[in-house]
Amino acid sequence: MSLTITCPICGKRNGYEFRYGGQDKGPRPEEDGLTPEKWAEYVHLNENTGGIQKEWWFHRSGCGLWFTILRDTQTNQEIK
Amino acid sequence: MFGKYKRLWKKSRLKSSYDAVIIGGGLHGISTAYFLAKNYGMTDVAILEKRYIGFGGAGRNTAIVRANQRTKENLRLYDEGLKLWPKLMQELDFNMLFFNCGNLNLAHSEAGMSALRLQVASAQFHGIQSELVNAKQCKELVPVLDISDRLAFPIFGGMYHPPGGTLRPESVLWGIAKGASQKGVQIHQETEVKSLEIKNNKVVSVKTGDGKKIHTPRVLNAAGGYSALIANMAGIRLPVDVLPIQAMVSQPLKPFLDHVVSSGVYHAYANQSLKGEVVTGSHMDPWPGYTTQVTARYIKHQAEALTELMPCLRGVKFMRTWGGLADMTPDMAPIIDGNHPIDGFYIDCGWGYFGFKSAPVTGKYMAKFMATGKCPEILKPFTMKRFAQHRLSGETASPVNYGPWN
Image (tube, rainbow over all chains, first blue to last red):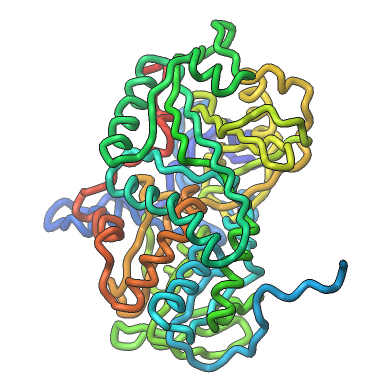
């Protein structure tokens, strides 16, 4: 079953129009006192949630907007 | 002739403590258990598998083995892995149908050829047989290839790696499981691990789905695509993305394809199984997830790619398609750690789609790691610490990144 994603501007569209941008990890860490470990954590480590996760998407073949949605990684369905 | 088959591995009751617990009844877990028992006399080992042996990558891979990677850390591991198959079949007395047919990677541009040149040089430097071939030689190796200018991306040449080939994944799994069971390893299917108990930064026990507590000083996370979820139980996040990957087989055909053929540009690989089916795949879903659903999109892609490279396949039907999970690291190298950050917690994952070819050799060294507590030299480069040290491995999946667009 393929994925559909709701773009805030274009509405519900085929998932292949979008680029996955990773799990929403919150804001980029402050550079003051940032250690390589903390930076690697922010860049590379993922929750890999088996369930509903908040994630970034980019409407590559559409309006070009970056936005977040909730998606269930066990069913590959967008959660409204 | 029916009804006389013996069980390959014994059924046993789950005990309340073991010397080692291995989470995941896939090839990596079973190999590690086998070598723990064989090489280190540690036979009080339980393999806990949530579903059944070979449910995951061990039963869903496309059976290709090779040692033509790009970096020295990976090359030496895969090279030893490749040489281990015949020895393993001998010592287990189990035919794994090792078909030593060789791999041909195609390049479709000068940039692609340069990438292969680097890979061939690395392989030869490490004493691994691998050579650069031109388009005409590709055609001699695989006569059904179209090397004309008709293709959108014509074939420039390739990398031929004779020591590679294919095996029968189920036989590999059954053979090693049988060997492990004979040495006293317990295999528990339908036994899910629900949580890990950690005290004073040390593994103490695991809890199964039906509430049983199993005490153990050593736990190996060898859950393949699901290893990130197991690591999360220990409070460890992994630098992986779990991507579904799909593969398919065609109807059986007369033998026509003597080698494993792959093309990074067309994003497809194919080999003919001993039954005659064309086994093909390589596409991953562009988003992570834990589904093993298949999509029409990739069947179409695969058909287009295969008929472009090998026009004689037009009209051939796909019989079956399936999906599996690949835990992809950003640098295409696995994650192997132990006693860090938690004592007694070992990690063998992040193999992406390299898990099948690496299983027995990694199991051998993982067993050494778990028995001695010290990481063997060959596995050291794969520590998770490399990400904080910015020492990512320079491995590539195949030279997919090099095409006419470079």
